[in-house]
Image 1: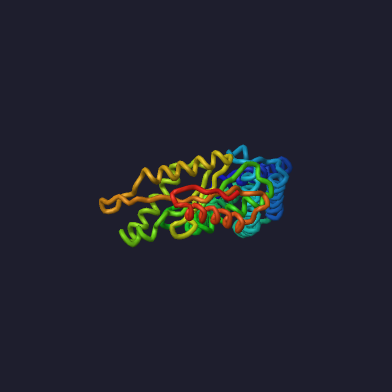
Image 2 (image 1 turned 90 degrees about the vertical axis):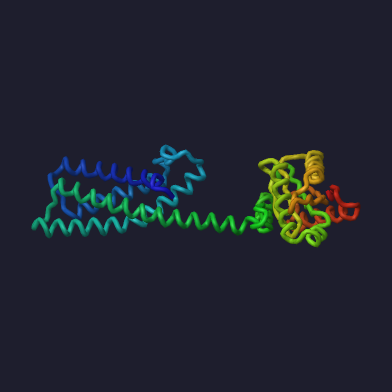
Length: 308
């Protein structure tokens, strides 16, 4: 959460407290410390209630969606509420210091302004420190998500990410558009490793991952399922469109050969395709894709087979 996301709360808090102070100043020239502390508490509570009820809209300060606003507001309110107790303590301490220094029980509004500025500065410092912690945590979360979702070699999504994505799709219960699953295996991959070495095998996997990414649309996803096997999820296409994508991948792989130590490595693919159904489980999807891939292998490799 950045400072400019919390700043509107500070702005409205100061504005609300100023209104209370102005009203009090019209009634009297001085104010007791306990009254000042009560004004701070009342202003804080009114701002929090205004955000909770939606009277104050963060959308005026930040271009974000309603859901993002809701989440942001909740986090900001919680953060501000946690700070409220500390503000009260600071106010009490400053009021006591004023009493000790002045030797009387009344506070001049000019001195209130000076001390209130101290409160604002302290709160800004607390917010800045909190933001540093939040930023660090967010970066750590992002780093962890990348590590747990991406295959370190090919930089495609990994099997964990595949399961999470499929679970999200199936949990909806109703599919608004067709989704097809490809299970892809590099043919004769063991022979490539035996002939050129495992480093060459890794180069081939990286080559295939890049080929898939370039050939697919932004909404399609590539996953490394394990070893030399990949899975691709195609969104928003029909059966014929999915078949054409599969054939295009086969052609691209035939016509493009990765180089290793100035030697071209011939690579072909076997592809098993299935359509995801609303009643599917993750295991059922994988099993049908694997069955189709087995057909492709048995029927000569370098081909696409379907299990629908």
